[in-house]
Length: 163
Image 1 (cartoon, one colour):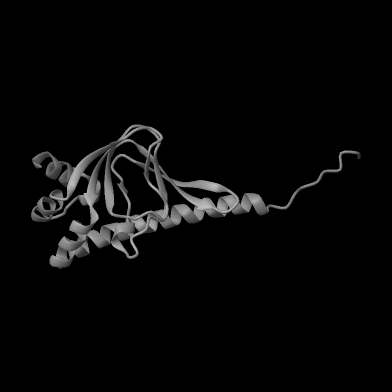
Image 2: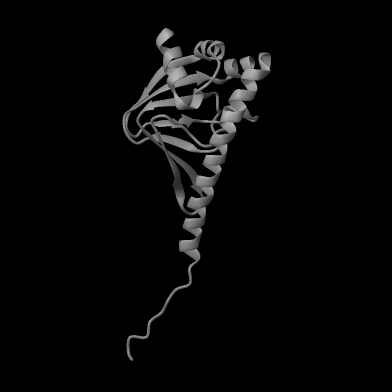
């Protein structure tokens, strides 16, 4: 568990988190690897964890009627993956799929939520950090959907090539 705490402490998401908080969170982390193409979680599925991406590349997509799954953001090494574990009904808002072999630390949500309830300072620190992740995902989703619908609804240009 020492190397897990060290990895957490050095990760940009947890930067400046108090050492005792790192130790407490580390108790709910375990390493998980995903193969290229493997689904990490699916939209609307039960969100019971979150991931710290140590190495790899993950596509976040959302189902769009008539379009299928549309990739809205690519998550890289150093990023956090998953925020739906924080809010009821604990359902994933996106589908996550590994685009290449990906190494993560998986955090068990129920235990981390309990820690946040017991230690308001830790809870605030995590919610504050995850709020930034949520804003990034929302902005990325809006940009992708605007691009998609702008291309779809652009007026058709007809040329009169006979002149």
